[in-house]
Image (cartoon, rainbow, N blue to C red; front, side, top):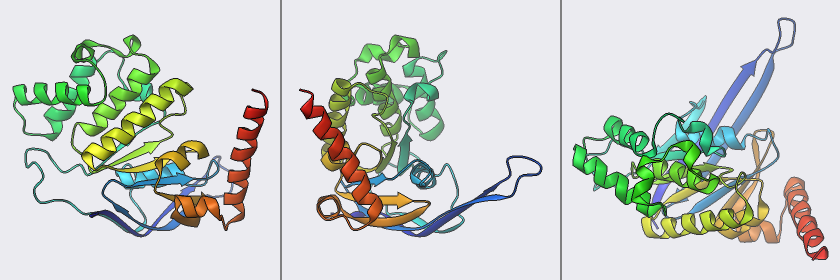
Length: 262
């Protein structure tokens, strides 16, 4: 497999003051180190405030690291009509990033118009192909946010991420707002697209069950630090860090309680 991402000694320092007389608060992230290969999924897990989402934002370019490097390894044969967007992000609440006054097609059209040199007809074809790719109909081009179910909104978010042909998708709790049946369909769709397109996924989640199912490697974070990382099967089989053991125990206790009620 080809390497597509190399993160070296990435750090981020955030300082804030809540009130005039409050002390300076500081959150330090890192150093973060990992490589990603084509078609690979790396999950990031940990408690709230551990730095998972911040790591995703740094990778996607929404925040700038204080130090270190994020190197995207690109293929020279990529479509020259598309500006380089090697990594895109999907958020948990996909509806929040959709303008209720803008139809799905217009939103995707604007993304292509601002980031590619495609002609009008090429943009139209790309939108139709992308909607079909994520399991939506051509008619969804004309839909507005209120006309879409939660699952369809998440598929639109996926289409928006995929339409610029990225190499990597950062998905921050993408299934948390979905009911179990829709969640399973979306997970299977993502796995199918990953296999077909060779996408890399950075999957940020609290759901240990899904992490076990979809990820090749796992990074466990606590208070801005990586406390354990490796192949998912190995880390979950023989966890070394106390937090990893705690997270796994909580998951299996929940599963056991569920089956005891059946």
